[in-house]
Amino acid sequence: MPVCPRGQIGSALSAKRVVSTDCQRRYFSRPFFFSILLIAVFRIAFLTLFAHWLCASLPASAGSFSIDPIRVTLSETKPSAVMRVENRGDASITVQLQAMRWWQAENHDQLEPSRELLATPQVFRLRPGQVQLVRVALLRPVDDQRELTYRLLLDEVPSPPAADFRGLQMALRISMPVFVQPRQAGHAALAARLIEQDGQRQLQLSNRGQAHLQLTDLSLESPLPALGASDGPGTAASSAVTRTLYAHDKTLYVLAGQQRVIMLPAGAILPAGASLSLRAQTAGGTQQWPVPAPGH
Image (cartoon, rainbow, N blue to C red; front, side, top):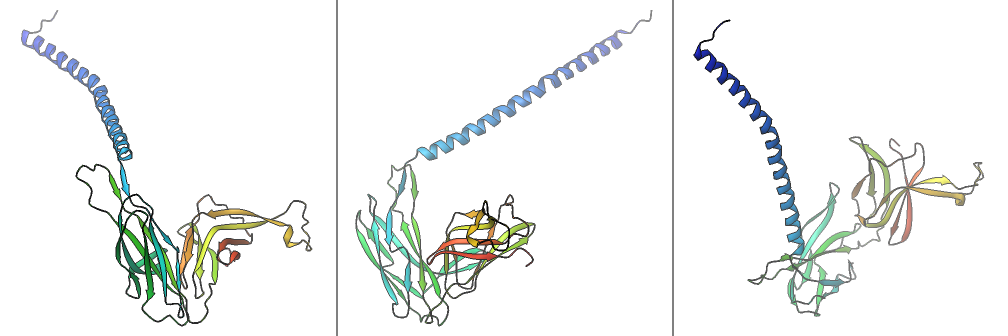
C-alpha cells in the first residue's frame, strides 16, 4: 500500500476544501444575485408608483377663462372685430395676447409672431367674474385672391406661488383662429387620394382653393350593395349602403393651398378595386369627395 507524504495529504485536503468552497459560492451566489435584482425591481416600481401618487395628490392651481367668439373672420369691409374674455375662475388672473401668422408645412401647423394683426390690450388682469373686451384689427391690406390665416394666442401668466404652496401650477392657453377673406370670393376645393410611402398607406388631403376647410367627423368609406338590391345595371344609387373603413375623431383644418396627410392604421382593410369616398362635416354641411386608389 503506497504511503503519501504528509505534505501531499495536506495539499489534497486543501484542494478538496477549495473545490467544495468554490461550489458552495457558486451555489449560493446565483440565488443571492437574483434576490438583489428582485429587490431592486420592487424598489423602482414602488418609487414610480409613489411619484405618480404624489403628483396626483398635490393640489393644482390653474386659471379658467373663456372667449367669445371662438373664431374671428375679417375682411376689407370689416377690418376689425371685438371679442370677450371672461374670467370664470375663483382667483384673479393675468392674460397675455400674441398675434401669430399661421400656415401648414410638413403636415403640422406652423406659427410665428406677426405684426400684421393687432390685438389690444396685449396684457390685462381679470378679477373673478370680470370681462375684458379685446379688439382685433388687421394692419395690412387683404389679399386679392387668397385667404390670410392667423392665430391669436391667449396665455395665462401664472402668479408667483405663495411661500407655503406645495402643489403644481398650470397655465391655460387658448389658440383662436383668425381668417381674413380675400377681395374676390374664395372657396375651398379639396382633393383626396390614397398614397403608399415607406410601406404605409396614407390619406392625402390637398386644398386647391382660396379659403380654408374645417373638417369634423371625417371618415373613409366604401360602398356596399344593400340587402336585396340587384346587381343589374338598373340598381338605384339609393339602394347602396356604406362601410366605414377609417374614422378620424379630431377636427382638421386644411388651409388654402396647403396639404395634410393622415396616417392610416396598419390594420385598416381597403377593398381591392372598390371606389372609396371621404365624408366629413364642414361649415356648409356634410360633404363627400371621391378617393382614387393608389396609382390612379
